[in-house]
Image 1: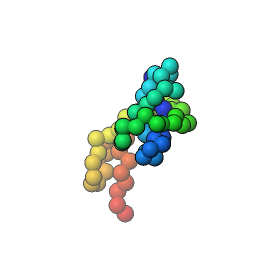
Image 2 (image 1 turned 45 degrees about the horizontal axis):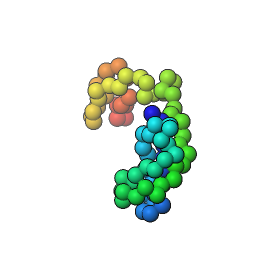
Image 3 (image 1 turned 45 degrees about the vertical axis):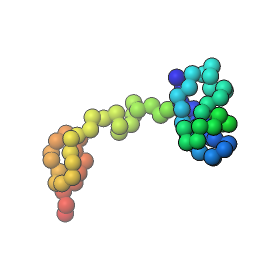
Image 4 (image 1 turned 120 degrees about the horizontal axis):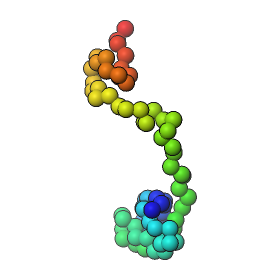
Amino acid sequence: MPLYVYQCHDCKADFEKLVAQKQANGEVECPACGSHKTTRGLSAPAKSMQNSNLAQPMSGCGVGPPCGAQGCRRISPS
């Protein structure tokens, strides 16, 4: 199901909702006020994570000095 962006006419809230394409133009309830007076807006397509840093395994590093683990991006204080 695609993720659509909506705006409520009553409370002006912006929200996203997963909606089947055949129901996307129908009435969608605003989670803030319960109104069905909503308008679907434009949503950006999902970004591919193939070339993203997020696709790399994250280290278990927390706060503190560098741990030396592969993927640790913390630097030693100079």
